[in-house]
Length: 177
Image (cartoon, rainbow, N blue to C red; front, side):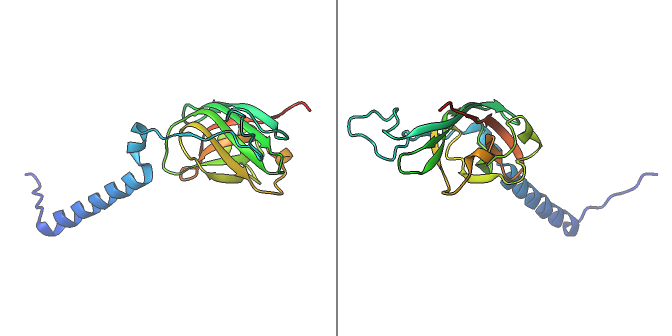
């Protein structure tokens, strides 16, 4: 004696609607197509006073490199260099050079008070968001807000805000003066 299961329109249609809604939500949340896309950004090296004859790869007079570090991978393969630059006009910029990482649904750039190795546990107290990641490959600049004490920050982090994971991070070692 087996049990007979009777499926009616009253149960099948609502179940299909619920499944479709769950699938749409999962697609929104994970955005799996980003695993197959690349966004390349190649911004010029910032300079407060660019010289007319200076190539884009050189800093302007009075600009200086404050700190530098190489990216290490966390949740996604990430490589490249992070540099903090002080421009002659007093502004500061975090520059990501030769960056190569994965695209993701809500990827941001942060300065963290934790080391590159420690951000695997989270950004830490006092982390500062500099903006959405402009591209997962290339060279890009992120303005640091005036008054931000760069000496408090130990790393630059490519961070997925939606899932609270680090794609990669770079320790920012101060340059010799």
